[in-house]
Length: 142
Image 1 (cartoon, rainbow, N blue to C red):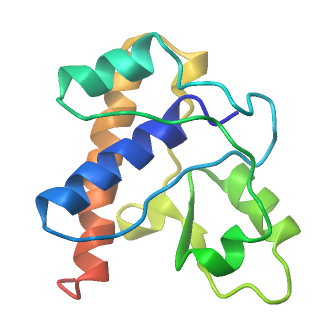
Image 2 (cartoon, helix red, strand yellow):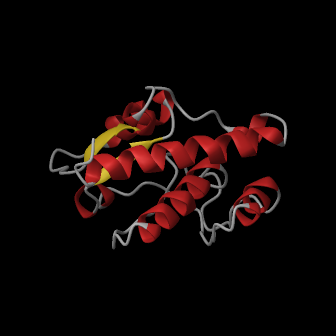
Image 3 (cartoon, rainbow, N blue to C red):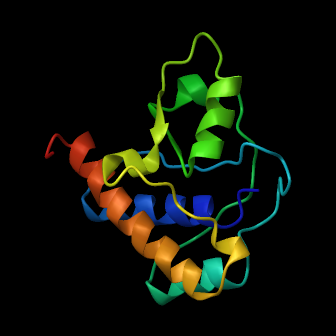
């Protein structure tokens, strides 16, 4: 849907990159078009980001074939999304496509939409550690 964990991950990664002085483009999208054009979940997603002083501004969109050549990395939140991404990957893809969790423990990010409000904080913490690990590798620190 692209209204919970992926926009939160986008916001957290963009903030972490900015803090390091990196000028990278960060975007998020869904593998299905359930909420195209909608803002992030106005409840816990936005509240959790604001609590941690992370700016979040996003409109849901669906993965596009151009993403596979316009971005250097496509990070999937979980195994199901990774399968969906690889299923529609065009032959001319140049992006490094992998599970975001592969930069740490190899685990996916559970969708907080289906859990309690504390799940959004867990998602934030996971996005923070994954962002740091991804940026460390990007900068050659790993």
